[in-house]
Image (cartoon, rainbow, N blue to C red; front, side, top):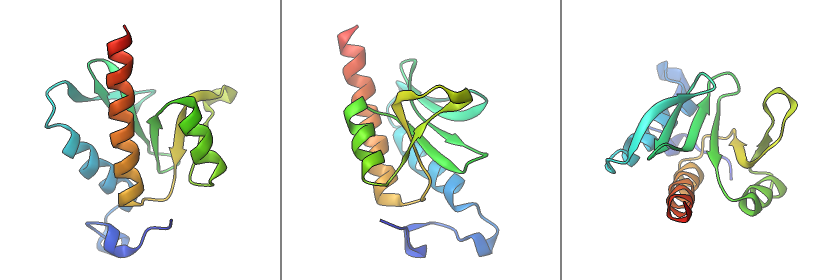
Length: 124
C-alpha cells in the first residue's frame, strides 16, 4: 500500500528524507528494550537484538531492509511489497528490502523482525 504524506513526520518539501526519517523514528521506538541497540551492517545503519541483526536502512537504495523467516520474505516479494536483498549478486533468503516508506508496513515488519530474532535466540 503506498504511503501518503500523513504517514510521515516530515515531508521532502521541508528538507527531510522521508524514508530515512521514518526508519530512524521507528527504530528509535524499538530501543525501549535494552537488548536492542544501534550498529552498522555492511556500512549501513542497523539495529540488533543481542547481537542478532534485525533491520537496516540502505542509504543508496533508500530502503528498509529487514530479516524475516524465508517464507515471509517470499510472501512479501510475491505481493509486490518488497524485493529480495541481493548484495554483490548473492541472494540473502531471510532478508527483504522495502522501498515505499509506509509507516504501518515498516512498523509491522520491524515488529516481525524483533520476534524472528527473539525466536532465533531461543533456539541457540
